[in-house]
Length: 171
Image (cartoon, rainbow, N blue to C red; front, side):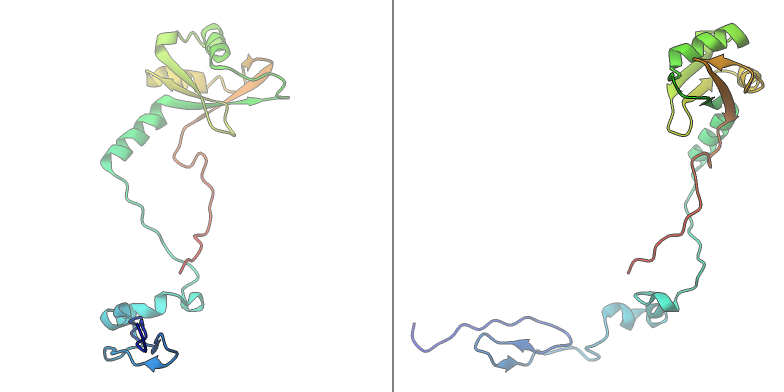
């Protein structure tokens, strides 16, 4: 336990590591030590990483769309309506109250529609069993009242809650 010291070193491709006794110990590095593996393998791609000023201002993102997603979207476009209560908002439009209103004004029976609470800005999501009933209710938009509010119907579309936005650059 006398005179000997314990030293440690960190392997770094572009630096000299410090030894435990305060001296510098050289570290064996590969050729072109300052370049990363990505820079050596794909030199044409290096300018795109880490330097936002060298990027193009506009870019495109590809999001895959499966056949099952297309089928679901087609079904929603034909059979789903979004209902929005237009008015003072003193009373909340409930699915039960909407069903009663649709029975009274449009002749919709409970077995023909499923009514769910939707995300803002819409109040309810109505899924119909037939395209004819869906279209019939759509034509009654802003013509019926439920819970002292006019009801506006609109067809579902994939952009219903979408808004344009830029993707932030992250390095």
